[in-house]
Image (cartoon, rainbow over all chains, first blue to last red):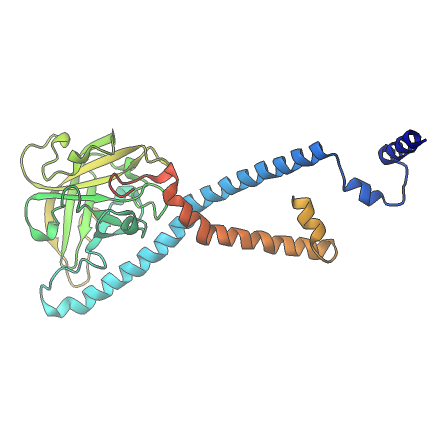
Length: 253
Length: 53
């Protein structure tokens, strides 16, 4: 008797006949089906999450960094305008020391700040090395290497187009009083991130053996990874005084 | 999981859809504002510096 009742209940549940509460029945699939469905939804969630992270890394960090860098750049320009009359003042390294113009990269101007820590570079700027080797700032006039780093992707991606640079291309560094015009003479498309010799005062990997006024741009490669480093070396060609209208040098026109 | 959330939202289908969109936006906001900035240095995609990891 009990068995028949159970059977009846079972058939009731499986038949599609209109019961008293069809919605109730639809809501209760088997345990395994439920588990599979939750697992599937988790996988979809994970996929969407990773997709969002890509959007965040490659787009949103750029938006934030560019915004911050623009603000910072305005501050530096304002500073310069105010200092104009006070003669050759001390270099203000806190907000940024100048701007990098690389026409071949087609990314406008890049603010240069001190240091290459993520806190600095994530601000959408290029940083000059203080470690492992202290970069020689062009404003000192001394021979040495003005070694810079910036992100290849995300956080402003200021050196994203570094691979567009060719030998002979100009790299111009703008300070309050001078335009420093460099010319690319060597490129190292891939090296280990432990290859710190590339930022030496005399970067021997570039082929140079004697001290000079060098500039070094370093960033990650290949794009969207941080596996290796891409290095571009330039040498100072000339220094041009900034005029009243801040007319850019011929290389930037 | 999502079905459960949907069933527990109040109102008719349109109201539920609206609340769902708001919920999604809230989650995206929290992710972009707090979770991703926190997670980024912990993930191996952007190991840019040698010393500052």
